[in-house]
Image 1 (cartoon, rainbow, N blue to C red):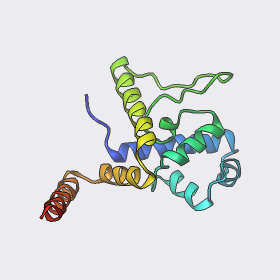
Image 2: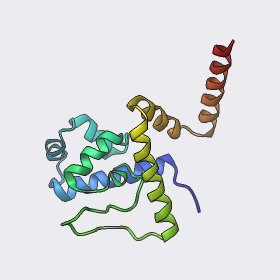
Image 3: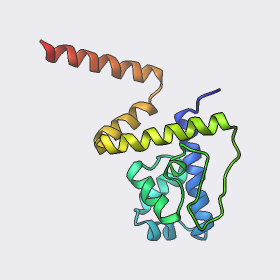
Length: 149
């Protein structure tokens, strides 16, 4: 099974947020801003795919529109609305759905134990390509060796 890239998560998040804007805000980002309390600049970045909402923002959006926070971030294909709403979902094979659900659960657990700065670092690290990740790991190793001395 091919693993989704960070660019694909960004495309999914963009698609999902634009869906919310179009469906529940008459296609107007300003209405989305009013409903969520987010700045126009942030919403514009999300709608253009230049940025993905962090965990806290995704939860805020999900609570307002009664959807899955992982779906807002492009991490899960399952929109899964809560009780009282029609479930809208993209059909996926069970193995893919289970893998995505596991990743979403793991991310929620990380939110409980890591600070916002640590989560931001993790998100930034995951956006890097393999070369960038290798470079960051070598810098961390070098710094850890330095402080041991």
